[in-house]
Length: 463
Image 1 (cartoon, rainbow, N blue to C red):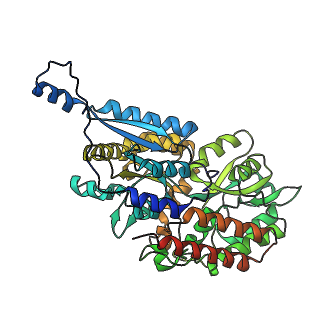
Image 2 (cartoon, helix red, strand yellow; image 1 turned 120 degrees about the horizontal axis):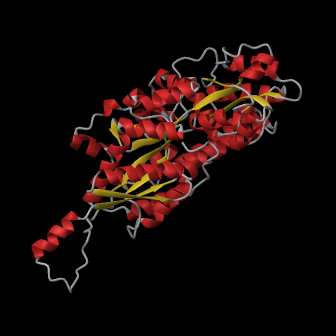
Image 3 (cartoon, rainbow, N blue to C red; image 1 turned 90 degrees about the vertical axis):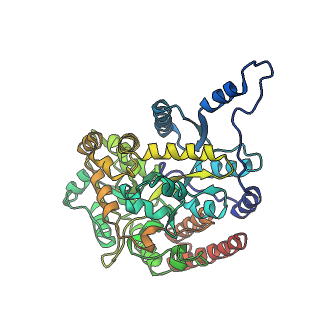
């Protein structure tokens, strides 16, 4: 996932759906090199030979900026230089929401990409749009071995046993803590809290001299993860995976228990509310103003480097209630979709690039240079990854958390066509509860009602 500061702005899903559905007709093959040079004296056979020798061009739209964008460009350069049949051109399209809107606008003219990176909460919409060719088609045709990839990452992007997109940048949240502050407070820096109860107790001990024990950004992704940690489903109908979701479960016991725990720490001033931006909680943590925070695994290198020379950073699993069972984490980040309004040659070219991205060496490099999980198991055998883990042992927490997650509908992750809007509504509910405008149950019930209404409106547009 890009950094967690990337927020999902509400997008007009229903309008987007209508446009996409109307635009995504049957794919018509396009012909590369179809222009005719009337001055050419080459024979038809020679012209055909030249034509067939041209590499297939694949346009890849992505949302990786800054250093992540440079890493993406390196992957493309390496792929292009590794063979001559396919040439990929990576084009940055802004945030995930911006890229998705641009894809919608491009469908009529077919000026859009062959391949697009879409955030995980856009999965249901992409499938419903009928604008894609499921990668399962090429998995089956190539007899591509999916067992080489991480099960708990693949599970999110599988629907009815079919893989619609290939995971690309994958992360989940972990607890970061200041080992020096733990030691000063009389807490064992090698035994971080793992439960709601432990976090509350540690926060109390750590809150002194104007410093807070913890600060968690008001981010809907965190509440989704807290549900998964309790083995609780966020939506009805098997988290929207058995059949299409029709009701939000955000006001259920798991949500109320989480928000009540969070609010009690804020009310007792053992945790501070810094708002919705994870950048703000990260800055406060690196400044030594708070002892614990939540952030993405993709932020680990930046956080450890930022604290270098100031304090030691420890990591722990995402906290959950002491009595929680069968829980884990849901993967975040994005995956790659092949668009079906491009020629078969372009689609196959996109698949060849996808296969390149999954090989252990590529995944090892991507992981070490970005902090995202390798999606390929054998990447961990690469010396590059072993050396990186020796330098950043805190990442073992994230690896173990991913591997220890029990596969079920809760940890597979919720899917709905209005997820970006739903996340915004949940963040408003958390904000209302933490600031005392509404009780946790009242705030979450109101959000659930609004989300359920939006799901109903969206479902009417899906055929």
